[in-house]
Amino acid sequence: LIHQSLLYETEDEFLSSTLPFVLQGLEKGEPVLAVTSHPNIQLLRGELGKDADRVEFVDASGWHQRPAIILGAYHRYATEHINHCDSVRVIGEPACLCQSKAQLRQWQCYESIMNLALKPLEAHLVCPYDTRVVHPSIIEAADLTHPHFLNADQVRENLRYEDPNAFVQRVTTQGSEEPKVPIKELPIRSNLAEVRRFIFDTAREAGLSGEAVSSLITAGNELAANAIKHTAGEGRIRLWIEPGEIVCEVIDMGPGIDDPLTGYLPPQPNQEAGWGLWMVRQLCDSVEFSRGQHGSTVRIHCSAGSLPHAKG
Amino acid sequence: LLGESHATLRLRARDENENLVVIFLEGELDIYSTGKLEAKMKEVQDRAEEVVLDLSGLDFMDGSGLRAIIEADRRARERGASLKLVEGSSPVHRVFCLTGFDKRLQFVPAPAFTRKLEDL
Image (cartoon, rainbow over all chains, first blue to last red; front, side):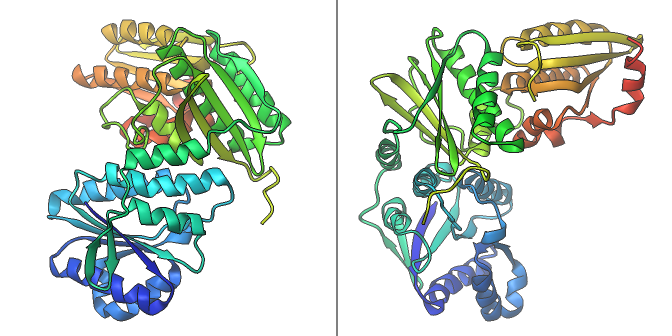
């Protein structure tokens, strides 16, 4: 994997790096996927002429909006194509329209985790960041999560690159503070129906409805089931409301989860176990593992359109 | 979305003929109730070539329920037998969609079987 960032401010800066990137791939007969904004797609198409037909374009704003789902999509693309070629080439512009701190953290970690997820694959991935619109904290993180920079047709090593395990742990720690709002809590006894009822009642009381409630129930149930499976049953589940989102946390005395990649890649299709955390990642805006004085914690954030958002 | 009674799975099997058994599930399938389904599936798959698992009465299913169904499907394939599923409510079916098993397992339309199940 060659994973490189590209910070740009103008159309020229975008094109002078991405165009050679695409052309090199086409020359070698590599499959090329370009996920970027609509105007950038038009720019590339214009320059490529009829070669544009050999590139798969995806408008990032109309695509998946959740980092875990995007990461899964790139992994799927690379594994599906790699049998027919030496390497795949992807322009992956993150369309992060973040509304919460948890979502920002997840976007920051997404680029770091990409290094683990795609590590064994022959892939060239360039992540363009439009510095005019992307949140400064995401730009800052991009500088720590890409082992390489792309500048025109030059690939340079990034000396500030940070080990993904360390990076994710550091970012997660920023988000593991105690909430300053009222918390609802339930001990996890040997009854998951009770846990589901607790989530249902709390979510409805907070004004959530429809799919947001059922997503939260499915996700919370999986976390509680893990606590039951891996510990002696002294876990607890906590719920609270933050601007625009509902937060759910399961704390237990089990060993916890160390690998930040957990749940990002699907188990093998014929594998029967291991789907729980994959589902949780697919359903929630952010999933964070940490360890504190109270035990091992998994904290999930689910945005809910019906809840008031933070201002600004 | 939530069953009225707590963590209960009701399960009925009916022999349509000597090769076909329909199992109808009602309630919630989670780590506590999945064992009941697993036991029934093994017993039924030992005697019938074709099993239809009707999930239309299921309110909830989690990863362990999915696991039991994938296992049953594998067992069926290994024996050259078949497992067909009747789709459940939207929160239940979403578990199959999220994991890609909506395409890997064989879902069949409900009517042909549910009409008969009403007689149970």
